[in-house]
Length: 241
Image 1: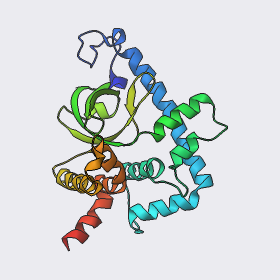
Image 2: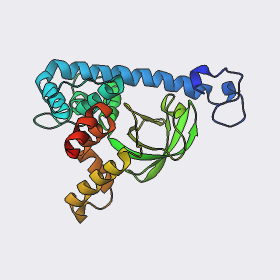
Image 3: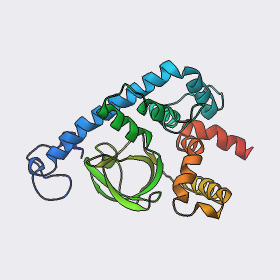
């Protein structure tokens, strides 16, 4: 059940037993408006980067696709685009999202949202509890804490125990997820574990607390490829050859 399909007089999908209109309806409405505002800022980040850093974006696209002509589905395109704008640094430092958030002519709200988008790094999280169509309670393995994030779409398609790769976007009122979410499967799980173990080992023992978060950031391109069926298949075929 998703919030948009929940009648106001029906029982709330969070499991409280109360009517939706007297429980989570206000949260759902606020979350929807917030998500639209975030998406609008995300689109402006992409438009600005396309205007001012087109060559760098093209290089990043070629880098993650291996310079091949690849037929990507909508989710794969979102995965790649989020990596390009959130993780791939431009010459001189800073990702496109970070650069945009520092522009002098942004108003306070735009700057705040852009900065929070820029700070949404890849994280490894285990689903603890779910209110379908409302929120997910996550054990954030990268930040080593438990957090409740609002999510209409993802919460309707996940279950306790699922392991996901997602970008946690902190907010003034509540946390949410930014960009597409990757579900760790029996196929991708061992590869992800080996990749992260190798990154942590190469960093040395001085990394200490937060080693997993740093490893995921450093391996963000490889993780994005692993989550994309269209991108990882050629890699697996080359490794098997």
